[in-house]
Image 1: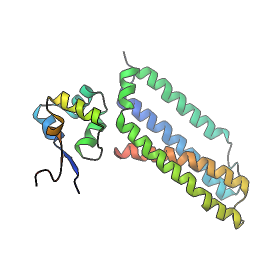
Image 2: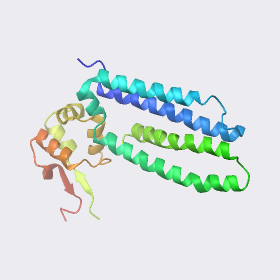
Image 3: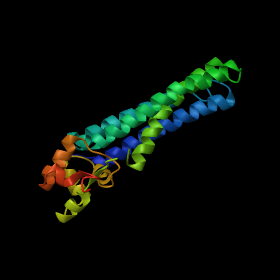
Image 4: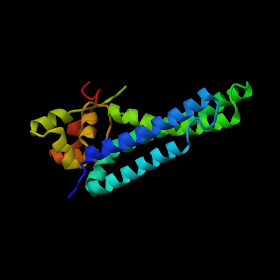
Length: 137
Length: 70
């Protein structure tokens, strides 16, 4: 017997990924605003992401094979692919943007390293969440 | 330019099926059926065949190109 339905599993996944994305975005933004690579403990994004991954994995197990397959149907993979493409281009475009900022002395290397890493993760996680909420591709 | 249109909503409704019931028959989420009906998402050939099988029609009865009638 499945304890978690496919729609509930999708919602749990959405909340987990969106929460991790928001924490990553906040980390990068605060790093730039406060001009320091560790605006708050780096363990917070790690713990939120880890907790989300574990929750999604255990929820998928509790949902059973059929519900897990429904929650990861071809619309899910389509949304995920779209988010991966967007995340890739955000990551690529950050190089010239941050290169310009570093070159002009607006930002330091450690802050750029911290912000670019978390923005890359946030780009995929948040774009997937938005696509998933909109329910389309 | 040709665009893909579909009669999924009408065919499903004619059989008295809800989006959730059709989704359950073909093993996808209700949202997937909804996005196909609203022409937001274009399904794979495999899913198109499953939908046709579940509705007991041919794929061509569900999907057609916008300029086919011209």
